[in-house]
Each structure stands twice: as C-alpha cells, then as structure tokens.
Image 1 (cartoon, rainbow over the protein chains, first blue to last red):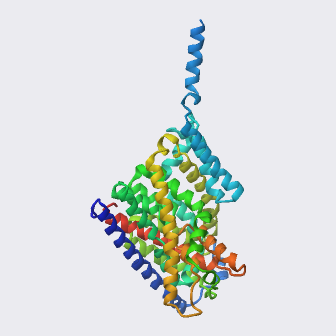
Image 2: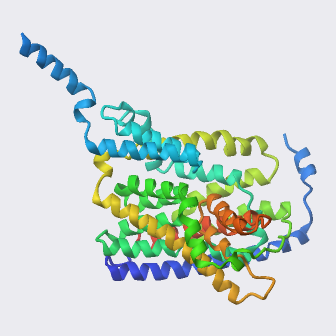
Image 3: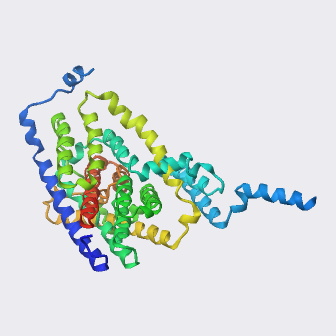
Length: 54
Length: 378
C-alpha cells in the first residue's frame, strides 16, 4: 500500500486522485478538441460503408 | 403417539422457511416491495429496480434455493463477483451510446471530473468512521454513480463490501430523479437554469470511428487497472459506429444487454439478505453513498458555475449540465434536462447533457484507476 491507512492518507489520496482526474480528463478534452482535424483526411460516406458490409 | 406426531410436525416445520423467518426478513421484503413499487408507479429505472427488488424479496424468504450455492441467483452474483458481468455491461452500453455530444463539445468534458468530488467526500467520511482505506475507497467510488465501475473497484479493494456497495450504487442511480433536482435547484438561479446552449457541430463518421480506438489506446496505456471496462465500452461503440457490424452491435445493445441486466439485477438483489444486510456498517455505507451522490451533484453544478466565470456572455453553459457529469448514463443527463425544461419547456438540454454525462463515465474510471494505483492494487 502506497498511501497510509489513516484519515491523513485518505485526504492525501483524495487530493492526488481528484487533481490527477481533472488533469487527465482535461487531457482527453484536448485530444477531442483535435478531432476535427481528422476530417482533413477525407470524408467517409455512411452509405458506401454499409454497402461494403456482409 | 401424540408426542411422536408433534415431533414429525416439528421436523417438517424445521425444513420449511417459516421457522427461520425473523423481523429482519420482513424489513428487507418491505424494502424489496418498495423498489418494485417505485419502478411500477413512479417509473424510476424499472429495468434495474424490478429485478433488484424481486430478488431482494426472494432472498429474504428463508429456504429459497435460488440464493444458495448452486442456485441461479447465486450464479448470477458470482458473475458480478468474478468481474464477468461489469465489462459486458460496458460492452452493451458502448453499443447503445452515441459519443457525438462528447466529441462535439470537449469543453464540457471537464465536468466529468469536477462532478466526482463526492467520491472523495465520502472516502474521507468513511475513513473517519473507522473503515480501512481500501474499504473507504470502495465506498467512495459509489459517488461515481457508475454501477459497473463501483462493482469493479469494490471487488478489487474490498470484496466483502460488494453487496452493500452494489446495492447503494444501483439504488441511488435509480433514485437520481429524486436526489439530484433539489441540489441543482438549491445551487442555481432561475436565470441560470434558463441558459440555452449553442447548437453543437456535427460529428463526422471518421471522428466517431477514431474515438473508440484512440480512447482504447489511451486508457490501456495510462489506466490499466480499469482498462477492461473502458476497453469493452469502446469495443461496443466501435461495433456501432463502424457500420459494418450491424448484427453484432444490435445484439450487444439489445439482446445481450437485456440478458446481462437480468443477471445483474437478480445478482445484486440476491445479496440483500437481512442477516448480512441489516448491519450498522450497511447503514453507514448507504448514508455515505448518498453523501457521495449529493456531493458529486453539487460539485458538478458548482464546477459549471466556476467555468461560467471564465466564459464570455453568449458562450456560458447551463449549470444544470454540471450535475450530469456524475456519470450514470443517461439518467443524470435526463435529470439535468428535466430540471432545465421545468423553467423553459423548449430548452432541449438532453443532447448537451450527454457530453458531460459520458465524460463522467471516463471521470469515474480515471478516479478508480488512480485510486487502485495509489492503493497498490492491480
């Protein structure tokens, strides 16, 4: 166990976890903000994709 | 002769459940019936509450073979305990979900983390009540309002608390239409609830196909402890979005999901036996779970209000959306929409609320993953 089994440990765990969660999810938000750039690669036609299915 | 007959009758009575019936069973049967009643009369998540409520009733009738080793409900519970069911639920949810709102509005994704402060409030609360740090973590994750994730983290941290944690998580998720609106109304003004969101940009097929692949890589890279759930969520979603596996995605989203819900609900309900359930610890966990839900809802709304301080007029977000960041897809999104719609019936917030709501799933997974890593659990 990395975090001590005490109230102090619970507080430390909470602070680190919450902060990292915010940072990580912000990172995911940044990645998603870049998604429109994918559209520069071209456009996928739904009908054409479906026609190719088996 | 008379004594012999009495003896036979006594032996027969001992073999029935009647002899082992006690007031605790009556209380739990009443709770089970209340769940079924809420589902039927109030329409509170009937897909969850009917199965949980019925299994709760049956598991409190002494002598029921279904909950004993070898019984069907017992096997259902093992499916949850062995972490077979939670990833399959995520698989079905992925196949049912359009992540477009989350991709289209990345700014709202942060609400998926801000609405999880409740996890840590109840974690610290649980530790103060004398639970071990692992138990406190398992109790705290109830505040993620994500049933499969709560089960997953609980099994890893404190498997002996699984019945209480699972029941608290799923019951509160079902009762969110009761829990969340008072908190949202308390923390927002009418003017704030009237804020209309700008229309979102359309999300292309390419983006929707790339999303599960990118997230699958990111989650397995950074959060291996919780990767099985999110990976299955993404697989289900890829089946849906790639358009060439229609049969598979429809099976995952409908038939398979229905089977899994039946197994999940009877598995959870079957753990609500009075002898195990009616304890002070259970009451503490139920109360801490409620605090986690209230705290998460409040922190999400406050988080949205703080975001508004930095946004220009016209770009401000409706703070009701913050409450949707608590996960519990799509219940929390629906609640946020309903609260806003009560002020303005034409304010269609549901699509916007799905963004933070879906981000909440990732927020809970990330919180759970970090928690498992910090507690040294693989």
